[in-house]
Length: 369
Image 1 (tube, rainbow, N blue to C red):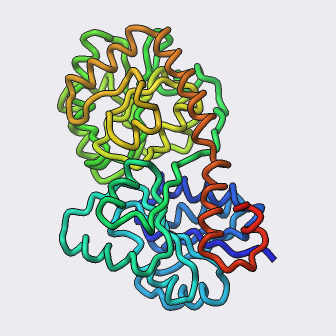
Image 2 (image 1 turned 30 degrees about the vertical axis):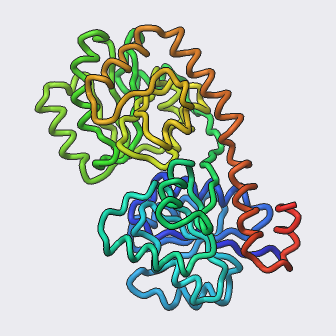
Image 3 (image 1 turned 135 degrees about the vertical axis):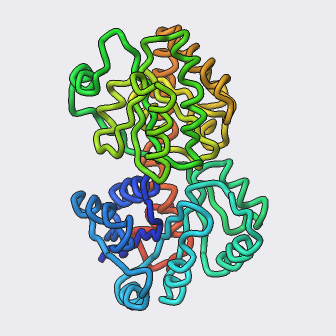
């Protein structure tokens, strides 16, 4: 009988984190009986629905009453793997796993950003209840290990299963109102402070001055969506900037784009960069830890964070030389195939599972050999 692997999160907005869980669960489903678990009363509902549509087992829990979930874990699970979007998430789930007598793994999807002494102390206490902590990038690993020691931490860089576009590039562009001679600049990120949309908005006029055919398409939801939508209108830029909200057709949008732009302040190892690289789309991104690891230190379109002038200059350079941008996109696809496949991520994660589980699991022993 296959071991039961529970991939769980209490994140209220499991966007990229949720994608990671689904990718990992799908990649490991031949060797494990995978269950995706999330709060059925909050943002986890969409994640559970997507998991069920993929044929994965699901388990909804109620964060305000976790005892039934603890009992379920004790009676059904072999291993609990908690996914935390930020350092203060997932604590109760980790403690629940250990109380249920399970080997418990935790993945940090962002670098260490805790500044509150209380939260820092809580995180230190949490480490006493977890068997291993996985980090998704070298920068994230260093940020945690430098504070808490390396013994409990492991590095497993993010990986994805490349998704193909399902519609024709021109049809997608036409539906968005992007003309044939215009250049589509895509940004896919939640509308939060971390993603630095205001910096990108401040860069738009300088880009248009040099490249009047640039059209910015922003995809995502989040607490700052309405504020940014109003800021675009107030700046008189709604002819050049379109906010689409949440979309399920990111592969089609990438196939229609001439450039992906990521102005984030910090990241773990952003999945949208990997998606763009897999699709061969040139990327402009801020020179921050996880993003640099994705595209490589020699990437020609790295720019300083929180610097609209530098961002505009980098975007303009990419648009001014389509041949160079295309070569960068091709190099990104090759880098993705070499380093960021889901199968590699799954194999490395399974080895960590094997290291914390009882040696009786023959499947895990074989995988770790």
